[in-house]
Length: 131
View 1: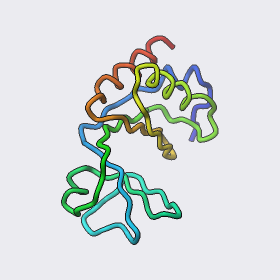
View 2 (view 1 turned 45 degrees about the vertical axis):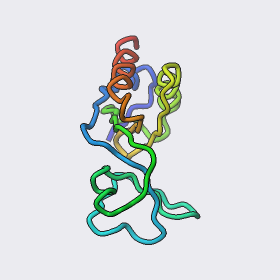
View 3 (view 1 turned 90 degrees about the vertical axis):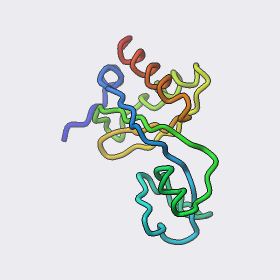
C-alpha cells in the first residue's frame, strides 16, 4: 500500500469527514465491558482508556466528562509522515479548538469538542482548499 508522506499532498488530499456520532473518553481497570465496542483503546499504567460512542458508555454506566465529534482524514497517511498532525492541530488551535489525534494504519482520526465539530470540519476543509 502506498501511504502518502508529502505534506502538501497530505493536506490537499485530507478529505475530512465528520462522523455523526458522539464519542467519549473513559477508562476501566479491567477488560472492556460487555456491550461496549471501542473505536480506540490505549493501555496506560492507570487503566485502559476507551473511546466509545456516548450511548454505549451510558448503557454501561461508564463515567466521562468530555463529549467529542470524530473527524476522519480520508487521506492514507504514512505513519512516518511529518507535519500533518502539526498542521491540523495548528489550524484548529488558531480557532481555539482542542484536538485529540489518533493515528490508525490507514487514516488519522481527530476528536474535537462535539459542540464545535462542524466548525472544526469547516476549518479543515478550508485548510485543504488553501493547500
